[in-house]
Image (cartoon, rainbow, N blue to C red; front, side):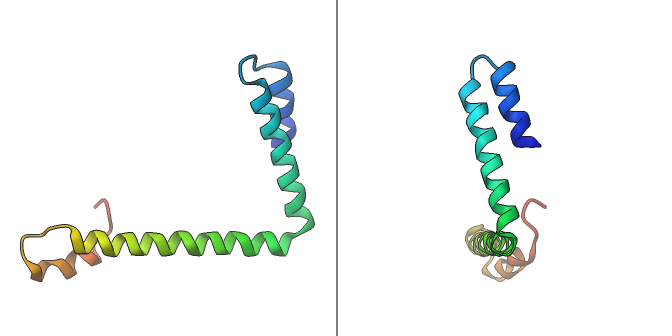
Length: 86
């Protein structure tokens, strides 16, 4: 439904970015068709991408914990256990 809505909105509503909306709508229709045809491969891809994202998140947390200067070396392991942003 979203792809069809993008194509229709691109044709009738958006004057400046008409081709962008039409192209995006067609892309969404194609990708959703692939997901319906290959549900197992799509689920595998989503899990794989989530695993990569978690890997990068963990590595960046470790690097941030090691490089952020708490004045003392003894405090650095405590930085590794803190949730970022808190």
